[in-house]
Image (cartoon, rainbow, N blue to C red; front, side, top):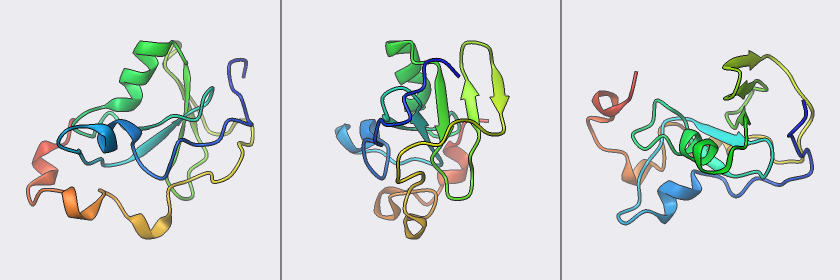
Length: 116
């Protein structure tokens, strides 16, 4: 899978863009850029930062950053790969973080705010 850097560490335990927003946002599930390690929120999340990262950078592959998930998504070809190259740890968000997260920023009506 050309375009993946297995040595790029994740940018943190949660969506870097949600954390940097004013006010900070929340996410449903997380995705890790296969090229640079940027952690962004999934397309079901209100801000869809993983897709925005792809649009801004052209980095075509993301890997799930959810515990127990190893799949990759190719934005350019719109193809799901059940497996791909091993990436440097950590390979998922901390399990205790839960989803959606961060808990203190998740609104009571969070399910209504998801993109489908």
